[in-house]
Length: 193
Image (cartoon, rainbow, N blue to C red):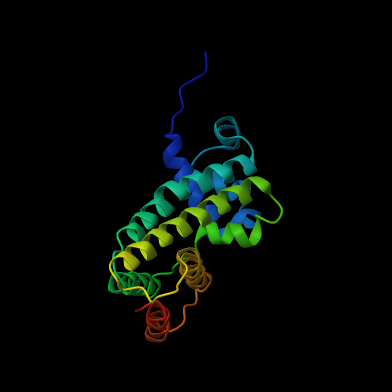
């Protein structure tokens, strides 16, 4: 009969997620992971499989605890003013004084997705969900009469998703907040009726 685990798998998986989020897949060693997780190699392999399987589970955890709440915030946007306030909130977060990490999914997209189909599928799923959320926002803005005539909902959704990805690329060294907010106000104004 196997011994019961002396650790909570979800808790240690969140710690592994932190290592992968900070270092990326390649730079995160098994020693880095076991040290952060507070478990030995046998427990890591027995519970999570190899490093690749652990990484995929960490991406799934990131999706659940970071991406899902983020999408819920996007889904709460009902107007162009809300959209502008949302981007200002993201920009302010990047300038909190604490070190902001690049989005883990964005990091996965630029480092692992090209060489790993499992990672690519996860990144594409998140990308498509964020796009869909922004499309719903643009539709609500249109329904409220705020959207400039002739704007394609899907194209506008992609524009907003791609702009947000641009913010993610500079999380560790952001453009000055006021300059970034001004750029995003201009972006939002391109949608305004």
